[in-house]
Length: 173
Image (cartoon, rainbow, N blue to C red):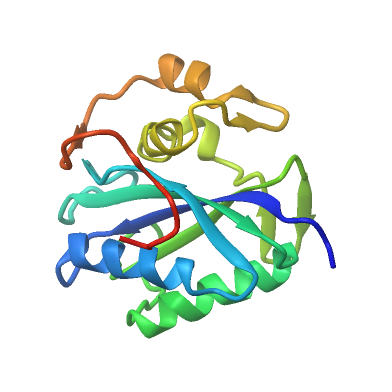
């Protein structure tokens, strides 16, 4: 059996009770086979990026320990999105749930439909702030320490909406 790999999933929602969508998704990540939630961030309210004519988002990150291969993990994430009613219409548009595989160990992958690390994670505060909250030591291969990258992009338009530090453990709450 393969040893577990640390993987990071970014979560986002701005439709149909976004906070509840993200909280349910944390629980669904914890229920994936051969996968454990090692840490999760607080929830953050963020301004939309790209397509601005939409409600604010609720964003978060989960640090997983998984034995699933990258493609298996991505397929599982897409399945969770579908169960939440995700439809892919307007790029960067409103969505019930968006799950992005941001990091998979120190791997760098570029396959059809799967790019790791996520190609824009290093320049998006709505990914970096929750990532640093969940995993302060995270490094984005080829880009650097997530904490330093967050310092460069800043946190304008991001509001932490949960009190206290990010959560550590595997109850999916």
